[in-house]
Length: 249
Image 1 (cartoon, rainbow, N blue to C red):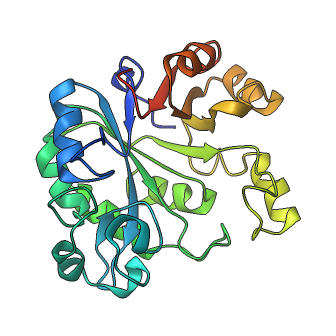
Image 2 (image 1 turned 90 degrees about the horizontal axis):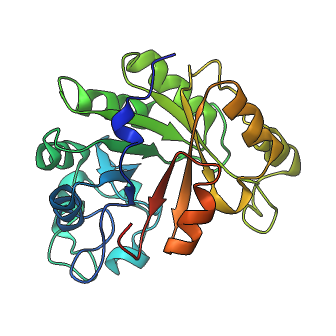
Image 3 (image 1 turned 60 degrees about the vertical axis):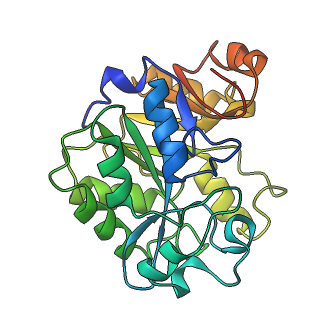
């Protein structure tokens, strides 16, 4: 297990960076704002058509750019030419974000599941992420909802902390996942294989006995996504740190 450095616990983590007016989520502007405020930063990775790790949350482009189609059907250069809604810049690569952060604050990187099944069909995005962070001196931790993805990062970047992004996996939130897959994921599989040092769990389910079990085993507990001081105060009764948006934590 690669330990999670204290810097991931001593300051709130801005969800998709410090986004707001003029600063779309996961944008360069939001990254710069989070660095200036001294917050940790959580970002998401999707894969471009030409195999680049792109800092973008959704699978489809519509909500965040107004363009049609999935991220995976556009090259990194094409994605850079789009304009994120509410901002003036295109979709950044992970390498560009690392350059902006420059080690100033910790970076929590979530790799999005690429086939919608949370299964072992992984590898290209994970390799792209590992290539991008090679030689970076700042604090990075990787996580994913897909345990196979997080385990891949353990093999590719054994010196970087890994964790599992987790939740209650209700049928309402994950209607396309089979019931047996949801049941398996709810149990937080693969923590040993990935050498996990933390979990990041949905804040409404922090009282789960499974969370308590992992905390008792010595894993750090982070949570997502807090949207008010009241939610933060409640979450911190169990979680050691919060991922937040929409207010100044």
